[in-house]
Length: 195
Image (cartoon, rainbow, N blue to C red; front, side):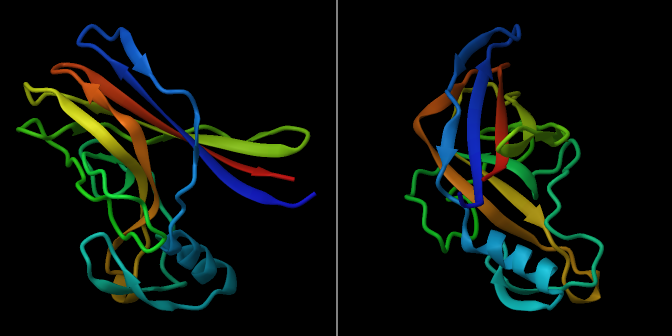
């Protein structure tokens, strides 16, 4: 047997009354990107990693002696990190550094209201261990928004405690998920290690 790190994702859409109108099955994420591994490399070898491109396109250094490392526990109204959604459909590449077209927090045209990210405890089974990261996105824009891509942005501070955000996982949602006005989408990522 070999140790495997995997992730699965699911998008659930509800209408303005909270009724589920669409739910994808759990889909295998095939899209951990290079920056995810760079962050783990920085943490586990306790050595800075430079030349890492953040979600804004700036080259950064991941620093080991900072308090924020691979952090995804974003609060209400923060779309800079944590589970994120977008409308882009560009194919995923290992070198991706951001969603193709992230939907940001707000209630204006093309925006969704980002709720706090939540995390389950780790559940350990006979051959695997899992936990789930979940976030709700409310559509207060007055028009439908189609989610075509999902992902996980993480915060990892650099020299001088400079806050920077990085893409760790990006997936395309086959066929997209239409979120109606007044409705909401819930994105869940299940992280798993198995032997």
